[in-house]
Length: 538
Ligand code: ADP
Image 1 (spheres, helix red, strand yellow):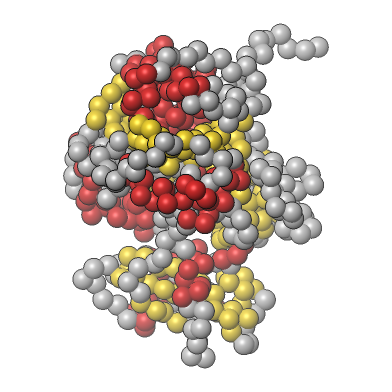
Image 2 (cartoon, rainbow, N blue to C red):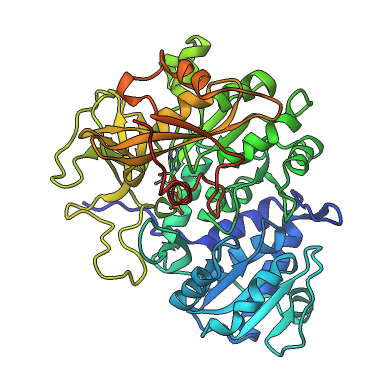
């Protein structure tokens, strides 16, 4: 017997219409060097329909790739909907990538047009001739002052919008590609993840759920995580779908500016990578605010950072785990029932985990070669593998030899994790960042967490250094808080009660800053090459 319910397709235009019909008066604020611009979802919806008309006027193919190169802004949100709701494919380019990678990605995806914020036009324009399929460059005025050359490929967003007719959105096929995002990848070329309408709608529902971000009409949401990387963690769809007001930082990503927006705009929910919250903390501490949750992920959230927020801002950090390949949110560190009345230290420990998979995602830990399942005893580790309707099964036209899925249909994450009896995930490391000492693995993440709990330490990153006897030994690279001091002995003394003896770093190097990747994560790759010739004393 078959169910007798309607087969309504799960397409992004259903989100669009819901926002247009029910949340027209809800506010969208975008920051810029010239101040905050204010609008509503009603204006946004009208402009988004006209933007659909612009894509027609520009002659973008029926499923053409629409590139974007910009900050979190209302115009970017218009593109987030106009491209997929007209059957095209939104392709967010990461503005912080190296030029060669941008060229590779735009050519690989086959972008026909790229919408560029004026403040980053200078980064983009020198590459335009290397991007073989790009026929149009549309400039979005965001308060930037880059010179615009006289070139027939360039047009102005607002001029095009003013001339365009609004279009109807009616995507019937939920399996169509809606957007794509390239992940920097650990080896080889960047890899394209292609989201469908269906995966995006389901991920939106999951991101909205109370065990994840729990957005509603009561919220003012501020995604600090960029719309140019990993879909702003789904907030760009989830906040409108829930009727939450939106605050978009634009190019104003300085910690002071972010803290000011949180306070002035009454932000209730925000999300970003740990380095962002590290920077914002001193500007937010002690200030009046309406925050109920600060989402954080993309790399391990140090317990010390979450606790500093609890003590100085009044709320701890809500950790989430995910990847570009998982749309990206796949698990959240929300406290399970039995820990809700636990003491502060126990709760802090729980919050330092990636947590429980969101409903819709299943997770397992296995031996990455034999796929032998590992026990959920919080001790054994294995490769974390996931499956669910918003996890990728393959990359877009991948290079030979790149296999994302296992033969039995699970997605390989490249993360090493342990799981406890509840199936709560504790990320131990990324496969390539583990340190192998005497045949045993040392988790760089656990060591960093322990070092960062020293009050004088601002940031710590641990990398493996080749060692003749042990294969590799840990080197701790430490950045101290301004005005603080600590010696190598102080750090090692602090670690003694916290980590196994054989995990103790062989050396501590004090550095000015941990190099960061294009999305603000610690760049272990850069650190490893910086210390490539490093000689350990023993
Ligand atoms: P990349 O950093 O390679 O461009 P992503 O942004 O998709 O790609 O990053 C995904 C990776 O980030 C995960 O595989 C994991 O290693 C790391 N990560 C994400 N969230 C967390 C978390 N909460 N704790 C530890 N690591 C995390």
